[in-house]
Length: 213
Image (cartoon, helix red, strand yellow):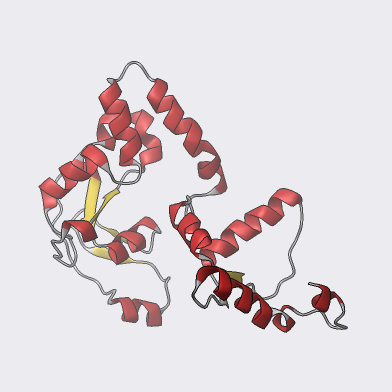
């Protein structure tokens, strides 16, 4: 830091090599500063909370093992309002004595596709609706009607008819709104991601078998 302060032009790349050296000594692996959309999103929200407008330059981040794990466990992908409300929603469910305790706990777990909800969805489909992959560890139970609307009908939160069973890439595409389906099961593909990304991921129109429910 002292060396950095003495530089006439204090650009980050002057200290990159030293930071890499320090991180390698701490974690035993080479960690590079890279572009990362999840980290960028949190960085922007942090700046917004301070009323700061960051410079419009390329942002790179040092993703240490702890940071990587935190990003994976965070609620990235939700809107700011959803992220702020998620804890309150879960508490509201747990406090709702009109539902049995086991149901309340099952609904909370269903938010991330776990517990009873996941078991029901895996039992119903058994394989990815798109790729036919049938390895349970690689399958994600994904709500169609959003979990946050549980209060409209708590039964739908645990209903396998309100779910698709997908492999991780397709689950992410569906969750982010890049793909959807007509009532007849014909895939709808957004203009995003780019044609090159769609080609790399094998995204092309296809049909899946959907139940009436």
